[in-house]
Amino acid sequence: MPPLSQQMQQLSETCSHCSLRYLCLPDHLDTHDLEKLERLVDSGAPVVADTELFAQGDGLTHIYAVRDGSAKTVRIDEEGFEQILGFYYPGDILGFDGFADQHHHCSAVALETSHFCRIPVDQLDALVDELPSLRQRLTRLMSQVLSEDGRMMLTLGRKDSEGRISSLLLGLSRRRALRGMPATTVPLNMKRADLANFLSMRLETVSRVLTRLQRAQIIKVSQHRVEILDRDALRERSSRGAWVADQS
Amino acid sequence: MPPLSQQMQQLSETCSHCSLRYLCLPDHLDTHDLEKLERLVDSGAPVVADTELFAQGDGLTHIYAVRDGSAKTVRIDEEGFEQILGFYYPGDILGFDGFADQHHHCSAVALETSHFCRIPVDQLDALVDELPSLRQRLTRLMSQVLSEDGRMMLTLGRKDSEGRISSLLLGLSRRRALRGMPATTVPLNMKRADLANFLSMRLETVSRVLTRLQRAQIIKVSQHRVEILDRDALRERSSRGAWVADQS
DNA sequence: CGCCTTTATTGACCTAAATCAACACGGCCG
DNA sequence: CGGCCGTGTTGATTTAGGTCAATAAAGGCG
Image (cartoon, rainbow over all chains, first blue to last red; front, side, top):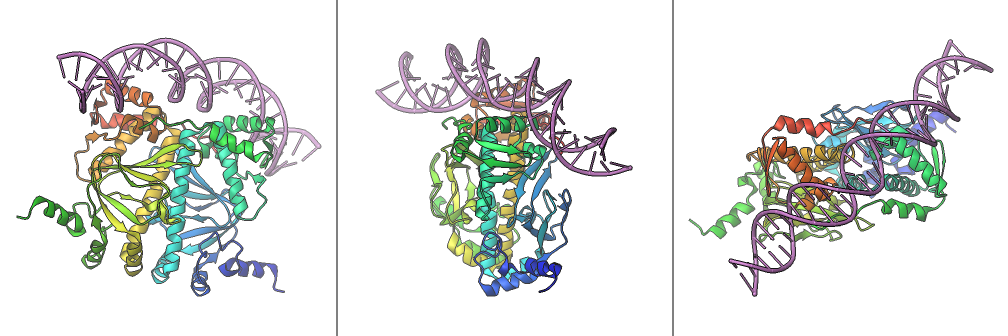
């Protein structure tokens, strides 16, 4: 048996054996195309917590897939305001927004010590011209993000604090389920301030809502881990908060 | 001289002569590639106000480019809440979010009597495999949307009512400038309720803010048209409202 | 281990904007 | 021309959640 480090290396570099291949880029590629993609992928050294994977404004050289661990993307707008745009888990792709002008429009930061697959954009680009299946896969992934963004705008715009937290928890739980992980336990690896920023609330409010939901026996909070006790109640609250729009 | 109808027909179907080609799909395509794209484009009949171009859930058969007029996209989420996702002007593309699963995730509705270029997705898809330049163009356009969505989330999350309205007005103005139209006059072709829905405010608040800005000599409102009198002040207010996030 | 910094919770107060409600305007049709 | 309905404006009241402030855990480090 090869030493562990070499084993990991191998694991990291073969999409074909990756347990996340159906979530990630490789989905829907045949073995031949997949091989070609694999050759581009390079799994770098582990990225420690709070380290930037890429920074807003950087040229777009790579896109990244989360292998293990987690990350957030942050954007600082023209006026200097900071907004967390999303949290990313194994199988998620980081960097799509850089295709617009070949520069990243947000920074990506590891939430914990994590591993990422790096894919050089120029080579990917060339390969995409060669493999229609890969192009289609990329298009779909981007389109998915688009459609999730829509959902997020709705959450930010229409839901009250309880609705936002509930939606977030359900969303994280759903994404865990997709990855075959226990969906009743949701680890909140990010800080309260990150949650608050992402949901556009104050961290005091996040705290309050979490304890309120806990008192209502809907969740059980323990520092950086939430147990979902009553999923239906959570769903109910995630929509309750939303207000109906006026008729146009 | 050919009759007007025929003249328009011709105008509609040749991207090469379209004044919007640098905003729209054709940008960066050479004449040869452009010709091939042109053959796909079909400009249908005029779409009257409040008519659906496509409906949420419809299969993705075409994507659309606004030729003249304007449109909005609306999404109704699982819980029945309605959210306007965006307003679209000449040169903008509608339908990108359908690539995820070949179904539209929102409806598109004309705000006024408008013309759209229809592009059949299956043929576009085939052409994209053939023309790397077109693929790149599409990727960039989608990526642009992604990056604008980010900006919008920031607006919805962090800005107060004045900031939201100001940002919207500046945004619309900027987009007019891009199209070579007078940027100090911004027509608000949508209803107040649409504005309110889009910005996640109540229509009363929209009204109040507009009059407040008018009283401050920053804009001049007349039913469905806003004159920007003091752009700097508007810019100032568009950021003033935003609150700073807690440090992570 | 104990100190100090960072992160999280809880409380009291206040403000922006939602809500409720009345009213005004403009266009359309009889 | 006058009434009516859709649309927009303005006012009074309420409330969710932001703000300020104090306290409590938790984690890091000499």
